Length: 77
Image 1: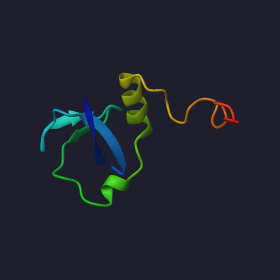
Image 2: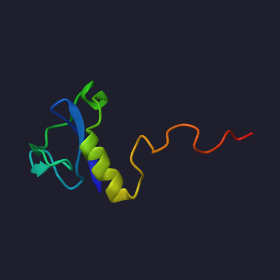
Image 3: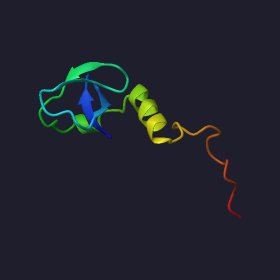
């Protein structure tokens, strides 16, 4: 399991088992020390693309944006 933390201008995924002040590594390979509870607007930072791809691969979810973009499911008419 993973959780998301703001770090260096992006939201990164880290192991859910890391506690405040623990040293760890993001899914994209950045070493960090888990900070105290982040403050607004840090939770609004963009998601790290590398962490997002690694998390989706781990969970068996297709990358985003999905290949083919809009209109691949038909018009529904």
